[in-house]
Length: 218
Image (tube, rainbow, N blue to C red; front, side, top):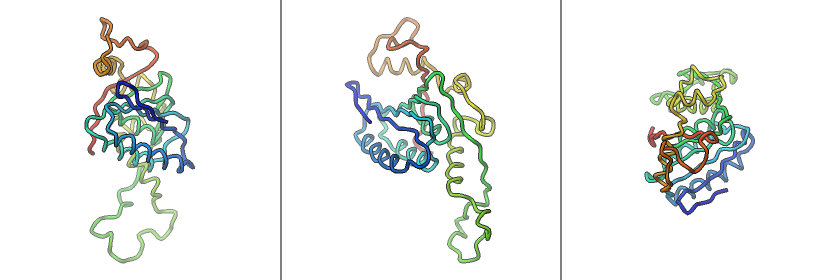
């Protein structure tokens, strides 16, 4: 589902379905690339659903979003609570919105450094390092650790992992803040503002927004 308004805002819905939904994400990733190829001025990703985006899909979506045109302003809108991979996708927005009663959650996982192949030895022939398959690292776990490393750029993972993160905590870290995004949207859309600087488009208490610039390069 996607649409483009007269103001140059293109909407894109991304359902958070969780595991067993590969066919859906395959189609949506292709649609995402096509939509961003048109270089919209503002691009809003609406996250909705009660599942989680698998780590590998979250990393793929991130790789597409950070390659968008420099002039494309990314807005991420969490219409549902977020967990694990979906948290990363939401954090990528230049501007973020979240439902007032939505929550954020991500589980913690630590991956030993020795589980990654060293470049100088990767192509050498020899005995496998791990004989017992149960001792080997699951590639999905490695992807999830990468997701956590990227989340850690916005939120302290070790301190907050495993906890329900609500709106006041997100606000403390500057991830959601009404006035900055209201001023941005008022300027971009040419809408009048009230004397206190808030947009007249909707009541302040209904939607929580944030404006935080995200680097497109790691």
